[in-house]
Amino acid sequence: MTRMTGKKTTGSSGGGPRIPGKARSSSAAPGQRNSADDAQAVQTVRAKTVSLKTSRGRTTAQQKWLARQLNDPYVQAARQQGWRSRAAFKLIELDDRFNLIRPGQKVLDLGAAPGGWMQVALKRGAARVVGIDLLPIDPVPGGEALMGDFTDPEMPARLMELLDGRPDLVMSDMAPNTTGHSATDHIRIIGLAEGALDFALEVLAPGGGFIAKVFQGGSEKQMLDSMKRVFTTVRHAKPPASRKDSSELYVVATGFRPERLKEIKEHLSFATDGEKDE
Ligand SMILES: C[S@@+](CC[C@H](N)C(=O)[O-])C[C@H]1O[C@@H](n2cnc3c(N)ncnc32)[C@H](O)[C@@H]1O
Image (tube, rainbow, N blue to C red):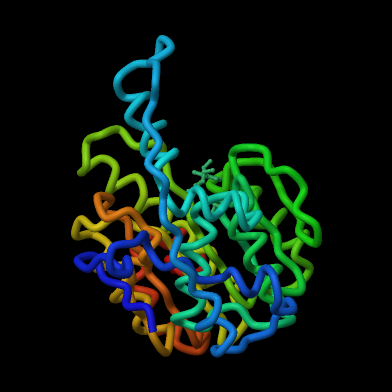
């Protein structure tokens, strides 16, 4: 099984990273979960090294970004396999490890543009997927996309209306624009992840799951502690597709136990709803 750590590279000897998910997009029916298939599906993408011949008025930072994109095997594999983002591989890897997406589920995707995670959830059998992003999302067949700010007070109700029932899985890949100041970036992303968790705790179906992107930096621990009280399992993971030089990681929780919510009221420092604060 693919290990997810921040320290190890997962590339096979001499090649690029191992990219799971190909067989599901080519041979496995949506929702089919077959580990043999997955094992066969693991492919090694060897990135062709591409260099920029001219700078064409780009800044050094823009050139660096472009060269990294052009030489990133996940970017190349996403293009080949029809995923809208390289981020799709992060969800594929998290799902292969934690078995989060099940056929027939209702899924909320917070920070969904351009729609890679929505594609993966639908491909893996989710019955209904509703995504929201500040940016427009081109229609994803079988999914519903909403453009707006998740932190806008009216958004949770609009998302629930579109989903038409409690979600079995709430996913947040939301990321604010980075400032380059790591402490500030950490606080901003934790704020978004906590908002997502707060919302998930209000709406998740019993037994449901939660995934959120955070940046390593210390204050995610408080969030993990609260989560441990209301979910059967809570882990953090850095999928191989997550860039090694990024402090990004994901908190992954399964087995939501709503009956435990009252017990943790006092730990939910980020609770937004009046009832929890009473
Ligand atoms: C890494 S991208 C998501 C990629 C997506 N998972 C995929 O596979 O295509 C993060 C997204 O979070 C969105 N975002 C950040 N803050 C947000 C907010 N407050 N409300 C909604 N979306 C937000 C950004 O606009 C950005 O598109």
